[in-house]
Length: 479
Image 1 (cartoon, rainbow, N blue to C red):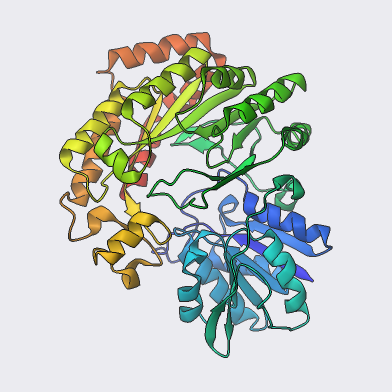
Image 2 (image 1 turned 90 degrees about the vertical axis):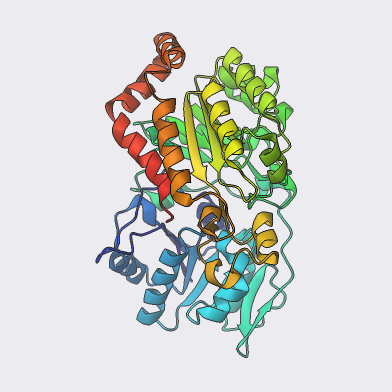
């Protein structure tokens, strides 16, 4: 049985021949994990990472035709949903007997999807590895009795049905290590906020899944965090190193939740003499000892989601941090020797006022960070603030369930979207301005001391204006 899996990206649908709006910077690990489980059961699996190509929709369809699969699985996020739907429609028109399955985040709207799009056959909710493994034998036998397959939405006699949710896999070591030969030839440009982190062969790794925190703007809300064993992680890092990878992005939702586990991994990296540059996302609660071990294990870049400089807004988000804690986290990471520190901020929360935005800008300018990213707040199905705004009749669920919406576009909001975008544009220019001599001096001194920083900032310097323009466009556009 042949299975084709596709990870679509947002397309410029205004073009006559739409193409990806941006290139993938990371392998589709979710699909690679599903493929690994299926291949162990002797299924024939192929993967297309759309963002690692410049394919038009017709070229994607040609790829599907070449694979000639029995089942097509499409992994869709909110921003790539319309691309995924277009691909599914083309595939079904080519082969009406093809079974098409949607998975990943956007299937939070699985019932609506199956009601609206008759060319979608099934939606997988939650982790898809074992759902797909149980589902495929039924499809192969033309058996549509899906009731016992957990985590599934399907149609029966024209009515959308759902099965009980699938439990999260507790032991992540049970999953096979991703086989990256399935995406052989795909090219990735590791970047963060417009700054290219590596010109060498770079990749990604997933060391844990989930997050125990309950931020109200976030879609990772299982209230569960699970991690792989250090031995299992080291095995994959050795494999990546042997395959010529030089820099690795840790794709965990929150790598630093458990400092003891992080330290254990770092100790093993040092013990095994693994020569890879690592990058990660983190919350601010890390310990001094954890940061020191991360530095010794060659973690070069940390990305923090600090979100706001207003305690009022942070409490609204249920972020459970304070601006002073953010400053302390940066101080710890700096003292430990972490080379590059990024931070992201959100402007335009439903309760936000101009005074809150001013506090966020002030915090960003005062933090000892190298790089700042600013985003306009948006809501979409599956997050708590979306549910709240729908209940308050501030968001039209029927209008925005497929795309989400920036709060500043809604009639009730008191700050104009254009004002927010212009504020972000001015803040970027101010953040990187020569009028910040202390910031410029620190960048210069640190770059003298660090070859790594010097190379990265040299890349930024060569392409500063295009990087800045890209950052601004991320705030302006919805994909």
